[in-house]
Length: 241
Image (cartoon, rainbow, N blue to C red; front, side, top):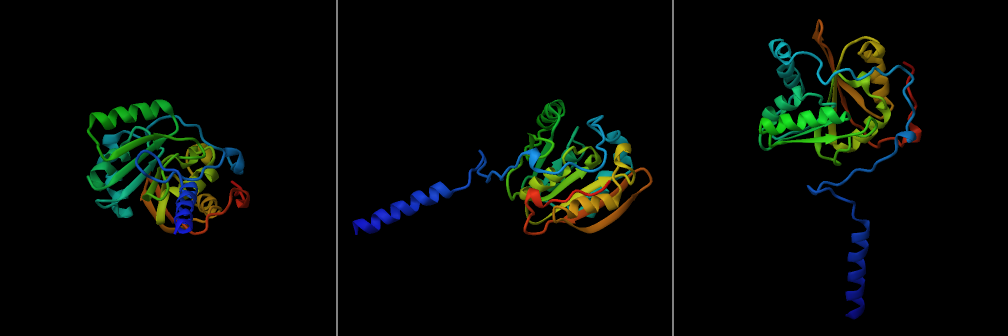
């Protein structure tokens, strides 16, 4: 009997040692790899010049936010990661769309943008939004929580796309999706050619499932699904830009 009790205690201790770390909300903290573990993109990376793509009123008059959320099937209760959230154009609209049972994980890598966005979220009482300061190669978000990740008008500014996509894979739930809105032009002109985007996504095991032209001046929407297993950083082959 004593031996069985000891074995049970050892099993509990072993389980405790193997337990994966969690954050304050109880979410599993994802595995992280340094930026140096990933290949650099073989194409120019555009400078970050602003925390917004265009005037919010003009974007609303054009119906951009509503159309994109409709095309993506954003519904109440979903958890959506807004990567490179900037001034929060999508963060604010997603918050209303997913409702109190949903969650928006807003992230950016520029401290000043993050500070301003936190102020906006607080001022507008968006209780279902959290704001995180990430790194160019790692959004610093919990593991397995997001149904969808949005990269809106900013993919061409991502300094380390392979690292970002590798870490983002861990943030998504099984079958989760990544949506990119960008312009069809070279990355040094603040756009991403669709073929280049598909290649860089495929290097991380993402598969394009939807592609929409959004109209003159609005670019395109490309949607990708995750695949298992995720490649290791050393298995990633960079695309020629």
